[in-house]
Length: 88
Figure 1: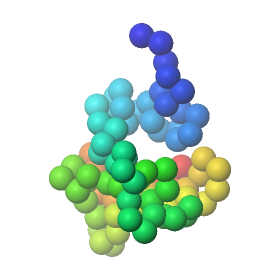
Figure 2: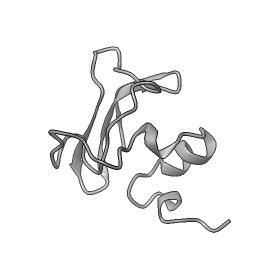
Figure 3: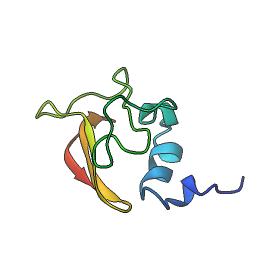
């Protein structure tokens, strides 16, 4: 199996980890139809977390904050871990 750019961690350095090692579906984080109210800093790149799989972190936040090209922070609870936030 060849590696797609997604699995080469070009846009998000933990794509391969989430997809292959943790068996997360793309739809866990991405919505092909986007998200109402998404901006270039919040819920960017079709991010719309599936609340049947992930939930708010211990501060009650479920959001991706983009701080630059390929950098930001994830605020949620998933895979048994709370991201308060988790920087990437």
